[in-house]
Image: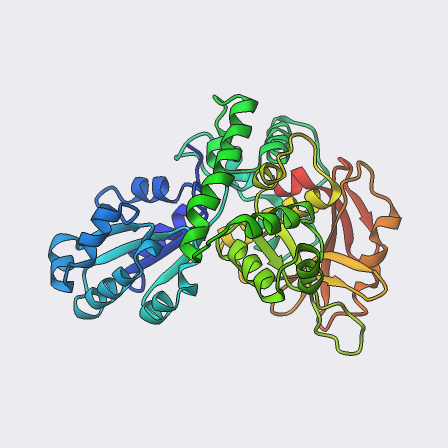
Length: 415
């Protein structure tokens, strides 16, 4: 099994005074259950996915929960939201019971959960593996921070930017990167014992299971075909702007249906919706968000595609990786893209309290000064200093430009 960076944060939360209820949400098959059972072997494991057992659990009083299950893991708790009321009641009456609630969608968006757990829980989100996690081989392996994560956590943002030397670590990073491009980062497809065909088959089955089970937790569908149609359309257009009205007209759906289906993909951790940065009213900026599939392997499976990636898929998989790595170190930041009405765009802007970081993403093997022109003009739009700008690509050479712009190899920076 691969080691997980977030494990330490979860244990820390559980040990804290505010961590009597810890909520862990993330897509199915990301390894939530395996990790939590490994970290907390003394906790009773309760699968709420079992329809018979969840009915029995729902009948238990708060006192019975306290006596029978004073420390428990409730897995797939979104299947029976009424159980949240029971856990809340135990929390309010006794100081010692502790619970870990696992779910395959963003639980706190469910009204009952949001109302019951407000102020009573610590929340963590769980994602497919990051590139540094892909390089581990067991639970006990330390997960090294990527150069990107080290950059985020350093005060000095200038002195250490790397010039890469091809060594063993670089070879490991490149191997993880090559796997990530082909198969994504779900734990099951990271196992070396599987053949390429077996990995593609797993991803295909994952998409089928998602449609048959996970999406039905969020809504009642009489006909899944419209959702499947939209899912495929967005997979084709990952890395692109979302114009819900245009999509609705193209697919023969209502605007509200398109918006709702996109939200389902987002709260079930299949996609990241990246809002447009539009804090400068004096500039003509697009307000349309962008869609990025969370996992390239799943995106490829939705499209029934094998092999290489497009430029937009390359952009999406890098932004998804950055998104995961920020979450894994519990770093406070907001992510945006920026696009002007005359077509100038910056793929990713990360907002921090007193400055911004910016990223251009190119699938090219060579970066030139022409690739940084939009980054050079970005400071004219922003309302806080641009601390550092990056071009991430396949170019193995580190290149420095003026205006605090540096071009780095994506695999080395994120791996």
